[in-house]
Structures are given as structure tokens and as C-alpha cells.
Amino acid sequence: MPAISIKNINKTYIDQDGNEVQALHDINLDVAEGEFVCIVGPSGCGKSTLLEIVAGLLDATSGEVLLDGQPVHGTSRDIGVVFQDASLFPWRTVRKNVAFGLEIAGVPREEREERLKRYISMVSLNGFENKYPAQLSGGEQQRIALARLMMKQCSLILADEPTGSLDPNNAAQVMEILKSFSEMGKTVIMVTHAPNLIEPSMRHIALDA
Image (cartoon, rainbow, N blue to C red):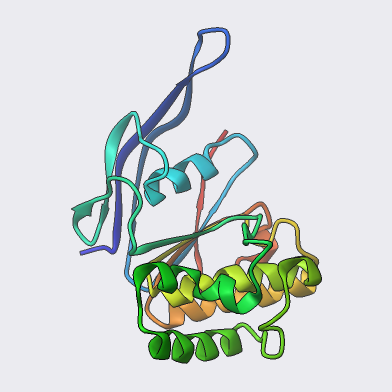
């Protein structure tokens, strides 16, 4: 059974003039557990819309998304999303940003600290734990967002242009972290405008405008 099955997804909007606009038409895709899939295509082809539907952030007009055989209705703890904007809490330190989800979930402090040390080390931010987002580069902020996803221990990672605002060096670091997710058995679906980041081992799906 695929980790994710996208079945006959259609998405239609009504624009400001009252006209019907079809953003997605009969999209079908199966993604295996631990697979890294990149979705590419021109601006306006519906890449981000598809990712938001898979994440449960947006309803499809028709069709369904299955995660481990179960329909996706709304957000899920099993699904983690990272956007081009790291979306960090500016008033919380690196440590507190990364640990936020586990604090809300009531995970015991000792377990939080153990995971915190492991995942901050995995994204190479040792020594930055007490800094605030404004003190860090865009690449460092994105790595905080990825560490926060690791803390959630979700099985599916959705990344919407995670390297879009980064320089080549930081983009490469973020890609290495995403690849490590896949190597850990997590399923990764990434939307990107940068085909040069796609490696031969990654499957890529092209959406037309």
C-alpha cells in the first residue's frame, strides 16, 4: 500500500469576476513510504495548491487523498509542512521554537530535551539554541523549521519551495536534511522551481500550466 495516494483530485476556484478557474484537473499520484518526490512546473500550474490539499489545509473540489489508506480530512499530526517562509515565533529562542509542538502535546520535559539535542545537532545548529530567529540567517531559520518537524516525528513531510529564498549553499544544506528524512523512512513530497536541486534518486512529477 502506498504511503500517500492522490486520487482524481480536482480543484476549482471562482475568480473575482465570477468565472470558474480550474487549478487542478484529475491529478493521480501514488508515493511509497520513504520515497522522495519532487513536483515541478511553471508558476500557476497548481503545485502549491496540490500540496495544501495533501496537507489537509485546503479542500479539493473532488477526489481524495489517502494517508496509509485513511482519508485525509484536515490537518494531522502525521503530516508535517515546511514553507518557503520558516514561520517561526520571533519571540521564542531556537530551543523554544523547536520544542513548541511537544510542549503543547504535553510530552515530558526529559523526553523533549533528549529529542531537542538530537535534532538540533542533526540540522547543525549546536550553539544556537538560545538565539532568536532575527539573529539567524534565512538558511538557519529554515533548518529550525525542519528540526521542529523532526520533533513531531511525522511520517509525511511536505515542503513547499523550502529553498526558494536561500543562497546555493544554504539550499544544499536544506536539501541534505530533507534527504535524511527520506533515509529515515519518512515520505517527502517537495514543490520546487529549481530542477537543479533534483537528484537522480528522486522521482519528479511535472505539472502543466
